[in-house]
Image (cartoon, rainbow, N blue to C red):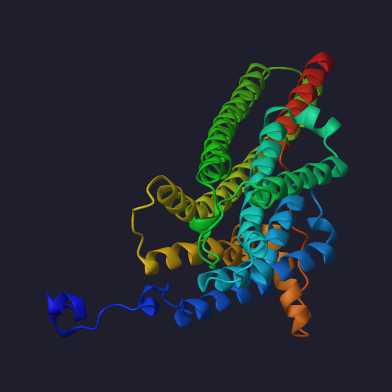
Amino acid sequence: MADVENGTCGVPPPTAADYDPPEVRLNVPYALLEATVALTAIFGNTLVIVAFKRERRLRRRTNFYIVSLASADLLVGTLGIPFAVLASIGLPTNLHACLFTISLLVVLCTISIFCLVAVSIDRYWAILHPLAYSRNMRTKTTLYIISMCWLAGSIIGFLPLFGWHEDPSEDACLFVKVMNYDYLVFLYLVTIIIPAVLLLAFYIHIYRVIVRQRKQILSVSTTDSRLSNADASSSSSSSRRRTKKDNYSGTMLRVLRAAQNREVKATQNLSVIVLFFMLCWMPLHTINCIVAFCPQCHIHAPVMLFVITLSHLNSAMNPLLYAYHLKDFRAALKRLILAIFGIAPAAHAPPPVECVNCISTLAQQHQQQHHQMLHVR
């Protein structure tokens, strides 16, 4: 019994100090990695915003959503990542300051996903209803939608500050200790599951519409070919009219095919950006939701730090995605970087105008011109 009273096997008995929570230390490799990601995000997204401000040709409606994403990513680099590093060592200890620093990243993530959903709806409407889109969609409308995305994202992300949180028993800023279980489930549904399903449905339908438009273009081409063969024995006057019509038809078909290729490419590029966002943010939200459902489940610290860094990496990599996949941003960023180093860019022809409703509009114009020529004959 003496051994039990004095400590087992010669080990001193526990004292009050032994029951204090262990000191949370800064993980230096994690902090250095986060600092690198933050600097990259700040540099890259600042270039995107400056390029958009400098280049008038970038100020198309779809690109306003890209700049909104870049602004959110810039805030992740300047505020979100430093706050995440502080939270990794349990700071700040004040509850409301802790809730603000933790909620800020949730706000920025929610704003980003809402903007991605908005630009997907924008493309969906533009491709399916091009005439109504052209009549009703204006730059002011786009800015209003983006403002609503920021307002809704801020309200949802800062709900813990309004009382939807837990009161932790220890003075440490730990995400799963201060976040309410019901709120984490709500957040997982609103910012990950429902948007992912909506985006998947939008892009699948967009691709189906593009395939149907391709068939329409081929059908118009086949009709023109049959009419040309039927008119092979007509008079010289009719032959001249037919040659003019055939030249127009051939030119329009080439324009339609080029527009369709740009349409497919633009949709693919946006879908890549959406997919990358989901791959970066879904692991962190999934783990937080698992911990909320299963408090006794243990997540290894390296795994948690990895998924946190992965979510922040999205903000640093997005500018590279814009530069690689979006031709207009790629050219503008190249000119901006050359200007920073004092190098004059080489003269080049202006790039073709990219639009979101070229195929449907041009197909309708082509069909109208085709009917007019038939009436002339």
